Length: 284
Ligand code: 2YC
Image (tube, rainbow, N blue to C red; front, top):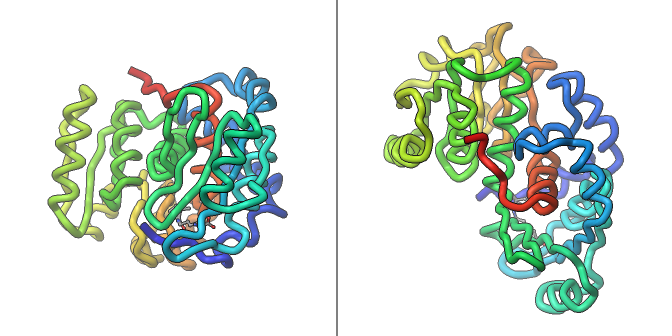
């Protein structure tokens, strides 16, 4: 799992309203709206329920330790969405104990392996990788004006790409997978085909070839410059949850409003919505 750097997130808190407006221009929905779309939920109801949710963000010193501003940024995103969020006064076990003892509804915390939201009433655990995959797939669905029966290429078959592929299959997209490790693609194909009545999932072998005939792309690799300017076409729509972004600066400039990428916001928003409503419900 790629570890965020302070520079990846320091711009987020002061720009949340602007980013949400940018998402509305690109997808027709706000940050909260995309998260509700990912969870198949009504935005108005969600907004009302968010205000009752008290969420404690607990910094974790294990492993490589604290990422400066990580917990503050997560709390800022939650507050922007309408939750009552606070960073625990203490880290680790003491912070978890404070979340329980102070009557919080949920806690969110991350070590070097997982970033999770835990509902302290239901014990439901939502993982950021799963949430980000669904949230960016939802953004791609919105950018496409409905991804049903459209060909979509998922680059990267790790936890985020797998979750995105599952979401896209649940939206009846025609999913193609590509990973440098074909076994990862085969595993995702088997898992997704087993869960959804979906068109045959294709495993692509060559990136340039695959990009030459896919308009809609979910870029979920942790590899910078996977998509370069020479591989971009004007009709392309790209949702890129991968950190660092797999879309080169040149390709991002060419894609302009047809690219959705961030390092925390959409994933955290889907985690928050799933806390409000329980497990993310698949459309079918
Ligand atoms: O500040 C803290 O509490 C740190 N323990 C946080 C470590 C987060 C490590 N994970 C990442 O940097 C990201 C996640 C946000 C999603 C994938 N990698």
